[in-house]
Each structure stands twice: as structure tokens, then as C-alpha cells.
Length: 284
Image (cartoon, rainbow, N blue to C red):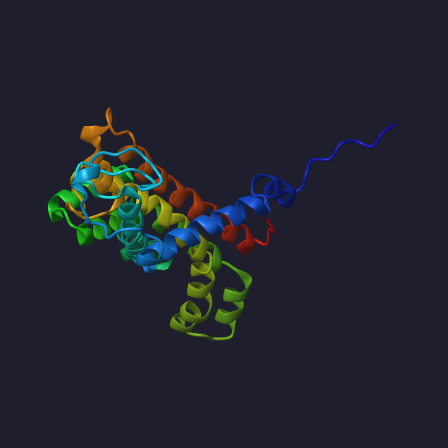
């Protein structure tokens, strides 16, 4: 009788869903946009606001790789120059969100009961609002700007991350090495600094990377609604907003900025999941 079939190990399943080629492609895409954000002049063909009235609403060609807009501006160059604004907002928003989440998560998880209970109730109320709706409410109150986007999207993402940090902190608090530190007479402050905080926050590297793509998408969505960075900036949501009136006659004005947003989101998400697997001891 033949041996019974066995299920593939988790590591093998992960290897099939995230092969090295996918990770390499994600890394190259992310590197391209990081270079575009840091040194856009190396990749662009024109300044972002350079107009060419002889080539208005031109489709993609060898002269203008991704076409031009209604002012004759090269769309490829605008996307390249907009990478810095879009990625800066995404990184800033996830940084703000994780800082707020860490404060709320530790307070809700290992804080004194008089503090933990109110914080948990606040998190439950915030989680009742969809992230984009909460961000939309905040950016409406703060006014449209890049800084408002960073704060609004950061605060909008904080409740979900706070619950993750709370769960992680509770697990670390009840671990054997923390119990041993208590038995040795270490103070609560020493235990928190040396054991609880490092072991709770270590997995956040992957969480940080995963969150960048989400924040770029949400920030671009708010800019598309006219509640983010104002024109004539080259932020990708602004490009989508400017191109919506020409979508029937100049499809490239919507398609290519949208592709840039999707590529960044997919690239950093795949890298984040790879780092998450590594942190959990799984080799992709």
C-alpha cells in the first residue's frame, strides 16, 4: 500500500505563493520608485511643470513615453516627480499611525486597569469607523494639505495596529522570560524597557512596510477627491483628479498614475510579507 499523502509544510506553501522571482520583482519595482522619490532628475525626461502647447493631450509615444496632459506636460516625468510626494505621505502616515498605535496598544494591554479600560473603549469606537471614512473626516477638519493627509491617514490606521500591539504585548507580558525577570526583582520599568517593548515592537518592521502601500493608496484616494495635496503638484492622487475630466479622450491620464499606485502598493506589500515570514522563521 502506498504511503499516505502528506500536506505541504507551511514553509513550502509560503514558497509557492511568494517565489523568489516575485520578491525580486517587487524589490526592483520598489527600488525604482525609491530612486524616483530621492533623485527624480535621474529618471525623468522633463521638469514636472514644463509645458509644451504643441503637444497637448498626446497619446504615449517615443517623445512622451506615457503621453501628455491638457497643458502639454509629460505624464511620465510628472509620475516620477510625484513619487517623492506620494511615498513621503505614505511613510509619514504609517509612522504617525504606528507611534499612536504603540502608545494606545501598550496602554490598553499592560497599562493599569484605570487606564486600560477607557483606552480599549476608545479603540472600539475608532474601529467602528472604516479607515478611509475616519481619515476623510479628519482631513476635512484639518483642511487639504500634505500634512493633513499624513495626520489623517496615520490616525485612521492607528486603531487596527493598536489592537495588534495590544495582543502582542499581552503575550509577551505572560511569557516565561518576563516571569523570570519579575522573580529576580526587576522593576516594572526595567522589564518594560528590556523585555516587553523590544519583543513587542520587533515584528513592527514588517508591519511598517506593509502599511506604506495601504497609506499611499488611501492618501491618493483623498487627493483624488480634492482633499489632499493641491494642484499643480504631481502627487499621484492629484494626477488622477486632473485626468478624470479627460478620461474618455485621454485614457492614459488615469491609467498610468493608477498603475504607479498599484505597483508601489503591491511591491512594498510583497516585501512586507516577506519580512513578516522571515520574522516568523519562515524562509520564502
